[in-house]
Image (tube, rainbow, N blue to C red):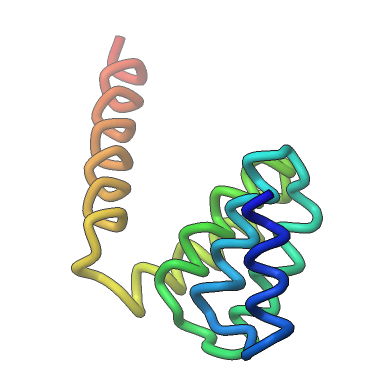
Length: 108
């Protein structure tokens, strides 16, 4: 029901980045990742480096099992545009942890 409220607000006023992201989140919650991706691409067409849109798109693309190079491109864009964001920091920590584990396995 929240999705319909957001759609009505967008039709009545303007499709802001916040509304597009909220609608995408509703779609992802319902398992409609293709619809969510379209909304997030629309959001990025309005603001190419919007942090929330990029993060939501990365989640969406992973659920859609998109190619790794596509996901890497958006991840790189997010790291460049918002290097101090907590999501980016946590992602960096997880990458470093994975790399350490991979190194340990190579040495074993």
